[in-house]
Length: 80
Image (tube, rainbow, N blue to C red; front, side, top):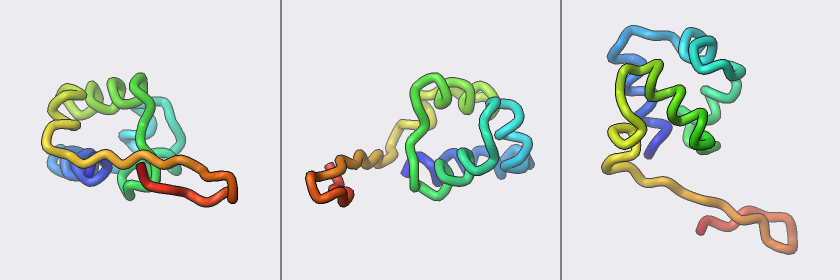
């Protein structure tokens, strides 16, 4: 999954999640949600993450499973 791959890249560089959040300009909680596959980054955020990790968005997305969610009329998540 995308978040797992981002975490792997970050750790391979010896970078902390806090440092990545600072470089990207987002809250640590945002990086945590992304890395734990609870949220997907927006395209601008994905580009900033890739830049901070010295890679490209395509490299991060390549061979990953990205799940989308819809909220149904009952207010529950459905995987798309």
